Each structure stands twice: as C-alpha cells, then as structure tokens.
Length: 90
Image (cartoon, rainbow, N blue to C red; front, side, top):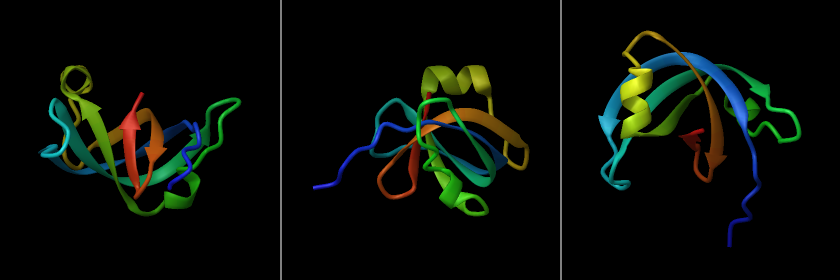
C-alpha cells in the first residue's frame, strides 16, 4: 500500500510535450522540464526532488483550455504530486 501525503507546490518549467491522457478521460498530460518548485504554506513540497527532471502534469481539459500551454514555452502552476512522478494541476 502506498501512503498518500497531502502536498502542493508552485512549479515553473518548460513544456516539452502535450498529449491526451489515455488513462484518465477528460485530462491532458503535459510533460514539463521542471526548473523550480516552491512551497505552498502548510504543505510539504514533494516536487523539490524532481527539479531538473521531466514530470507529467495531468490537467483537466476545461483548465487546459484556459491555461493553453505550448511546447517549448514556460509553464507555471500549482500542483500536487501523486505516486510515480505524476502530478495533478490544482
């Protein structure tokens, strides 16, 4: 069993790829080269360990349309980390 820790981080990075999420209906997956992560008060920052690596951020399609990320462009957002280097946008 995997213990789940409630966590949030403000991240910045560069979008490297965008695709439909084949496992989560209604989500897009955005691959980001994570450059920095900052704490959200009262929550642990589990993204800190992934700085300098590619991460996958799952974004609901409704939020995706608002954010409109583009490959090779900057990305900023607040995320929570799930198991296996997978993140979800707040």
